[in-house]
Image 1 (cartoon, rainbow, N blue to C red):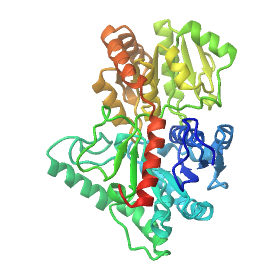
Image 2 (cartoon, rainbow, N blue to C red):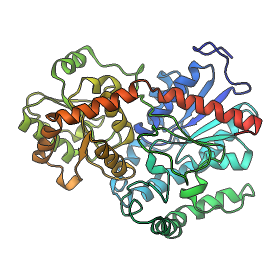
Image 3 (tube, helix red, strand yellow):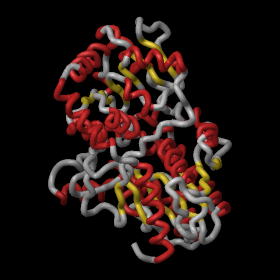
Image 4 (cartoon, helix red, strand yellow):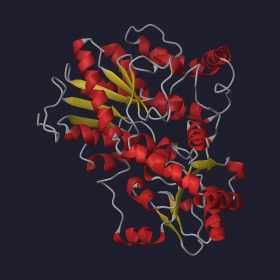
Length: 434
């Protein structure tokens, strides 16, 4: 093994890391960024992700395995139920989590080297969690947003639930109902059937307890964004935001760079995996027209973009957010934690149209920080977007708060902190000491 760029050797005994970044770009980007940092430290890294991301991962210098090559990522995201606030989680479980259980488990077991491999798995990498139980392969669980942490104290805002209000007993009662009536019935039958192949006893409270690795859990956000709660999983470490968005792989063209630098546009994206953003982009274009301001519409699925755009509004497939948002006037997006954190780091106001999953909670946290606002989809119209953006962009107090948050993040490198957490987990695994 080579020494890292920091001039030290990799952690003793650890040679290979398998990173399970299952999901869309917002889920995969942090694992690519983490993988690049781990390679810099001298480790061999293999990323498990949908085949759609092969080019990105390999151009980033990482090994790649598609655990489900017969599936088409584009076909999966064309299921409109994914974006429903209540049906979305069950749709993801049925369409992606359950089918990936066996292949992810099998690939990890086949590719690990006993005593030299550590797995880092995203929240839904259930196959990695079973491999930890069935074969003793050490696992670090990564949660990208606070909404993945259940609590009876300060907790997330989740669609269809009121776990963020009322006394602790009321919140605990809701979680028991979620487990008993929704989450466990949807997951336990097929998960425990698979686990039984390896002689494992049935698991329960999947979402609240089982999904977290007992070795280590990394929350990829800073403590000031979501303070740890007394009933979060043991051995939880917060590492800061993983601010990576294809830097070193995708660079702006000269024409795009010149235009962005000159125009400082409003930037709009409904999510990297959203193919139902027609109304979002229509409202975005209309808002730019009303404001007389330039706008940049980002999507790799351009069929959503209106054919006729107002002067000064253009479409682009993708630009690295870390570069782009420092040259933007504001970001309008769906509330994904990756987009929200990049806007925080860039010090620009943001307007969020939350759809499902953790997006409502992220939007609430952005509003509490005083650096943005939100609109539910039915109210996300050109006039409403224009009005809120005009207020946000013209408010000196908002800009002051944005600058203060950006300054807080300026000295943080969440990917370095996450890599440190991974190495600490390996030491805990090999020594038996937390």
